[in-house]
Each structure stands twice: as C-alpha cells, then as structure tokens.
Length: 264
Image: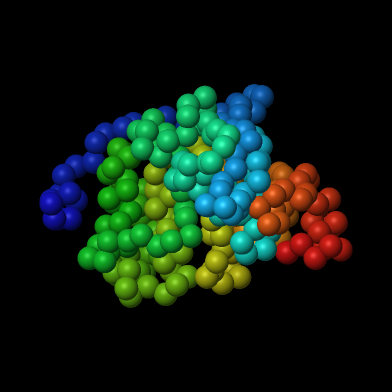
C-alpha cells in the first residue's frame, strides 16, 4: 500500500482528556499519588555462547521516575535497555511492564511504550512530516495533523518537515527519532543515547523535554554517556562495567565517586 493511501484516510478518533498537557496529548497530568512501579527487571542476564555480556541485574522503574544507565562502551548498557524494551530476551530472569510480561509484540505494551534506539529505521520515500503522521495514525491520535505541527516546532524540525531522511543531517535525524516518540502516547520512554549527534542547544532542549515527560508521569529509562544529562534529569543512576552493576544510587553521590574512579 502506498503512503498516499495511508495518509488520505482520517486518523482514528481517540479523544484525550481536556486537561491534557499542551506539550503533548499522551496523558493528563495526574494528581500527586504514590509512584506505581511500571517496569520491573528481576535478575535479568544475557549470554552469547560462552560470553556473558550482562550479569544478573534487578531494577525497578516507577511512573514519573528517570533511571540513567552509565558506563563505557561495551559495558552492557544497551543490552540491558533492549531487554527492558522486550527487543531481546534475557538468558535468565524476567521483565514485566505494569504486571504484564514484557513483549514488544503485545499490542497492550506497544500502545504504552515508546523506544528511541541506537539504530535508525526510516522509510526512504517518506518525508519527516509523513513519518510522524504514520506514527500518529497508527496510535489513533486525535487531531494528528495539528499535533504533528506542534511536535515539528518543538523538535526544531518545522523547516525540514517536507525533507526526506536522506536530506537530513545526523542531528536532524536524531531529532526525527525523538519526534516519533513524542507524537504518540506513552507511559514508558526508553532511550538509547538520545543526546548523540545533538549540538549543545539541542541537548539542552532534550533535557527540558525529559523533565517535562517526568512531570507528566512518564517513566524514563535512559542510556547516556553524558553525565551532565544524567545529573539534570535522573532520579537514580546505575553504572555498569563489563556487564555488571558497579555502582547505583543518587546521581550526585554516584557520579562524584565515579569522577574519582574514572567513570564517564
């Protein structure tokens, strides 16, 4: 089916509450209440043949909370994120999302979990705006076209809305991947180095975006190499080295100790 046929159909009408945030339509800001554990990883590990790339890890992430995963390249951060997203099965242990076994193919989970991974997956013949419209239509966002224009402006992509992926800079491509997550509803946001390829101003806007997500009750699991970003947005950090957790806790405490020990 051609893209024109998809985009000519009206988006399914899913009405969001009138109290929804002006920033995005995914959820209304909820009254203060005890944090609910959304994502739970219990003793998850990963082995490839004889090589264990991830020692058993247990982690809980609640609504409105951000946990940042830090460590050198090859430390197991991205493997842990892929397991958390249901994109890779753990060798041992289990992952649940809101009480459900984490399964990327489960429509109940796909409707509530947004992932920005470390690989670029785009349709070469769709423009930036058409990519966002495709995601919005798939998730039944009401007033999709108007919302897309808002997200384009928010991610500084308005003047590139009609461009194809091949015409985007690396930073603009990263902005498109983030926009695809922002244009749809979500309760859990999983991000693998979202700051990569972004200039300092774009990284500042990324931090503002993540803080707004947290204020709206979205749970965020973030892989990053930028300790400044972790300090600004994370409630907790987990540092991995050679596939095992070597430090965890409050960002300022862990990163101060890590600076002395060479954590980056």
